[in-house]
Length: 274
Image (tube, rainbow, N blue to C red; front, side):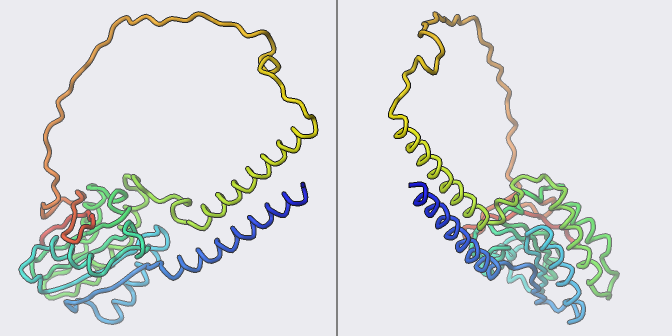
């Protein structure tokens, strides 16, 4: 019997390792770190390469895709509406198969003259209102003078985003367990195998003794009934009025409040005119 139990545990572990390897391969294929959509032509090819390198390094530290977007024709839409539709179409996120895949995007709207920081997935909670403002501060501190290029301003984005993701509110911040599905699968399989082995061992031990202990054996003495009663004394209820607040999802600046796009996905962030 013990031999069969050992074989079962070993088979479960081997099966778990196989799943781990497949899950790791699938996840590696899904992970996206950085993307560049320079539709307005604000950056040279060399500048794009440098920006992507900085963004990839930041994405690997935070498990959050970092995206650059520039455009000069919003089609009559607001910056928020245009970036909403763009993100819906591109299915942005560190894990594109997961609608909660995290991303943070820096958008240069040259039509509405606005710079927008947009968040999606778990980054919505990790980058709150204050963190959005800090990212915008870092970008605007390096904004160019008339006629100069926007590379320096964009280059401030990845580092500022990493700081925001690391030191922000932290709500919904992915843990090691959330970021590694393979580990969770393996741990659960191993736990199930150990539980099965433990149950088998207890069953075998019960067969050997052929005896079942009564309740008194565990209590150490004869059962006793203790009388117990509760008395209701008093209670106090304090009511506090919660002031009404607007969602703030459509405000052009300030940022941080989440809203649902026309495509049904939630986004956060905010922008600032220039």
